[in-house]
Each structure stands twice: as structure tokens, then as C-alpha cells.
Amino acid sequence: MNTTKINYKDIYYPPGGILMWILIFLELITFGIALIALVVSSKEDPDLFHQSRLQLDTTFGAINTVFLLVSGFFMATTVHQFKLNNLKRTSFYLKLAMLGGFLFLILKGVEYYFKIEQGYTLDYNTFYTFYWLLTGFHVIHVIVGLVILLFMQNGIKKSTAVIEDVEASATFWHMCDLIWLLLFPILYLIF
Amino acid sequence: MKKKDIYILGTLIALTTLTALFSNVYFDLENIVLIIMLLSGIKFLLVAFQFMELKKAHSFWKILLVSYLVIFNTMLLLVYS
Image 1: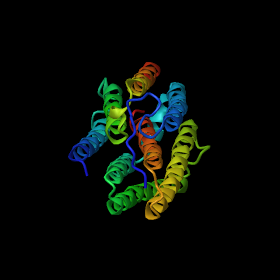
Image 2: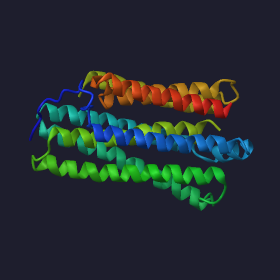
Image 3: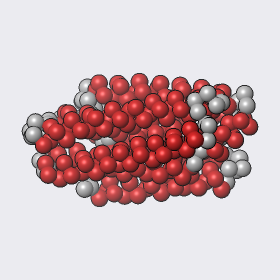
């Protein structure tokens, strides 16, 4: 296991690595453009967007936000414990972080099930087209994040994990939080 | 487990609850969208700076992320209004 100190103040070495941060900005810009497009579309039929927004369950959205935030907290603790060379605790907090991700996916699945049952599918109206595409792409990110964390868990178990990998994986996981923190208020609250 | 992270998590959960409550109870308020996006922006920065440890990074990355948030929220509010 390598926990060598990295000079984060160097412009080329932000926590998580420069490539991960380039990816984060590309993702934020992509989701940002899609969200602006959603708001532009809402101008054509504000009533339809308001009624559609009211059909979404804010409580589901808020609980899912809390799941991701708590998971992000455990992920930050995982990195902290790894830097302290405490592998047992690192593994424990990593499992808690993954649990948060799984709970998010379960609740999202329940929400999707209700929406499909009620007939609010991708082609129901413009709002739901955006809803399914935006939340769907986000869910894919969460699934990819969980796969990365599973590999990280394996690396920690075998003591082959290095700090750069742990930080990069954690940064990807936090990116899922950041994207959701933009999606939640716009899809569930403002229309 | 860092104490500061626990406080930040508490703040994030409180802000999430507050945002959801505001949108349901005070939806008719004139500046509600501005308030919701402001609170969400604070959450965004808290996660980035504290949990992602961006506070330790070179100023370039900090300025870049804050600029993104300002540009995104400004555009959103301009289009929305």
C-alpha cells in the first residue's frame, strides 16, 4: 500500500487527479447544458411543466439526496482512514459509502416503478423526456461509481490499493453527488 | 472520522430539508427559485470543497468550479425569469 503525500497545491495534482477533474468539468458542462435546455423548454408550456413537476415525489428526491450526501461523507472518511493506514476502518467506511449508493438505486427504482405504473414514460411529455434522460444518465454514473468502488474494495482487501486510485475513485463517487445536487432542485423543485 | 465533516454533513442535510420545504410551502414567493438555487449552490460547494478536498487544491481549480456554478446559476435564472 502506498500513501505517499501528494502536493495538492501543484496545479497538475488536484485531489483525485487532473484527469478526473477534467472529466468532472466535462460532465458538469454536459448536464448543465441539458438542464438549461430543460428550463428553455419549460418556457413553451410552463403549466405542463408545473403539473408534471407536481407529479414527482419531492420526498423521494430529498431522501435520495440525503442518501448520496451521507454516502459522500462516508467516502470522505474512507479516504481519511486510508491516509492513516487504517485498512480495516477504510474497508468498513467504504462499505457504508457503497450502501448509500445501493439505497439510492433502490429508491430510484421504486420511483421509476411508480412512474411507469402511472404511465409517465419517456414519451409522455417534454418534461418526462428530460426527467428520464437526465435521471437515467445519472443512475448510470452511480452504477459505474459502485463498480469502481467494488474494485477499490478488492484492492484494499488485497492491500494493493494506492492513494491515487483511492482518491480518484472517491472523486468519481463525489461527482455523482455534485450532478445530483444540480438535478434535484431543477427537476423536483423549481417548476 | 473528522468532526468538521460531521458538521458539514449536518449542514448539508439541513439545507436539503430546508430547500424541499421552501419549494412546497413558499412556492408562490417571488424569489423562491433564486433562494432554492442559492441553497443548492452552497451544498454543491460544501461537497466539493470539504468532501472532495478541493480546499487543498491550487486556486485555479477552486476558481474554475466557483465560476462554473456562478455561470450556470446566472444562465438558469436568466432563462427562467
